[in-house]
Image 1 (tube, rainbow, N blue to C red):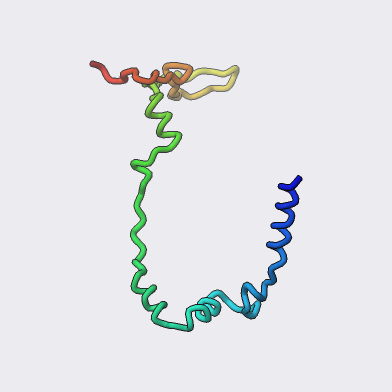
Image 2: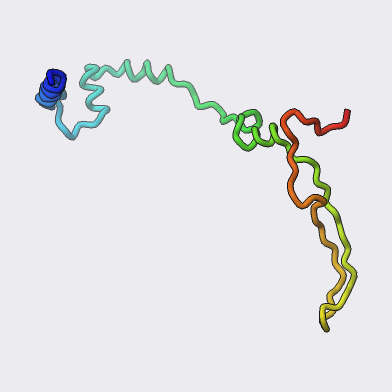
Length: 124
């Protein structure tokens, strides 16, 4: 009970402070105006800050060496080779409709096979 009373009193004390005592400035003042008023309008501070600034560096492409979920899965569970089979379908009739000859490609295995972690993909 004492704890709740203490918390309530502290909250009421914190809310009793007026804004004018904390920030005695016009409400429409910008941050630059506030900063100049607090620093005494000294322009040398702005000059000192300008000397410390560095030019922006060229953006670096980190994707070549950055780890992400897709590359981790590909590295840990690489796909096993699944050769493509090319099949030629000779010209034929589909009912009374002639179908010209064409080539089609399909994978050798029906499902994608993955290597287990540590399984070698290259021959010894």
